[in-house]
Image (cartoon, rainbow, N blue to C red):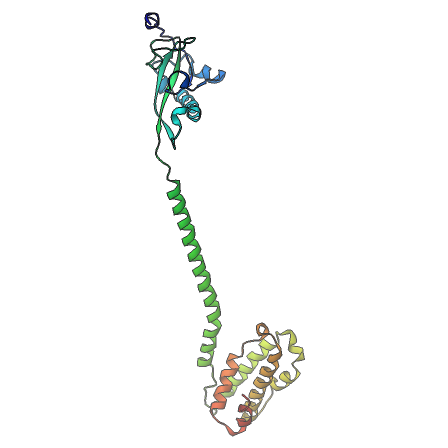
Length: 270
């Protein structure tokens, strides 16, 4: 003991990083040749090694490796460095009383690291928040898609209602605009029908919907016949291929509601 206590080695000789275990339980990592050269550089001394960023980075890197090997970190969820100090060690002895003391005695030195349990990672909490956000985004997206779908469905219905309200041949039969109104509706229908691939086969519809100079009574009769012919012809077409008939249908309903004698037979077919 006395021989060991009399050893006074003040030289700068750090060779690695170790934990704070005792005897054979101690785990350590020796510096590589390049890292040892950086730690023992001429400008690094016992008094300023803590202020040297490069040296501290090397020590911390080795300390993290020791944490994986150390028995002192077993059971720790997230070990972190509590303290780093320089300790002396006398090699080739089974036990050294001053092994864990601040290095003022010893032939070589280690950077001794004391570990403690770090802050628990709140992974489960953050995962819960992450999944909650994803769930809310999914719910909002579904509601938006449903809203868009309903809007697409209701737009034609709204347009149809607006057409029935705004275009229903409401002008007086004595008004010159009345014939023009009927003519405009029939013309609009013909434009829609002409876009259909099957339009060339609509012989009767083309005949009844054709334009010509007619008296008012004949004009109204031709108008209803045009509608009936087209409506009956559409029975053979798929729903997606049928053009919109709301405008002419509203006008036909208005004409039939007037109970005109020359239109009675045609209105009964509605």
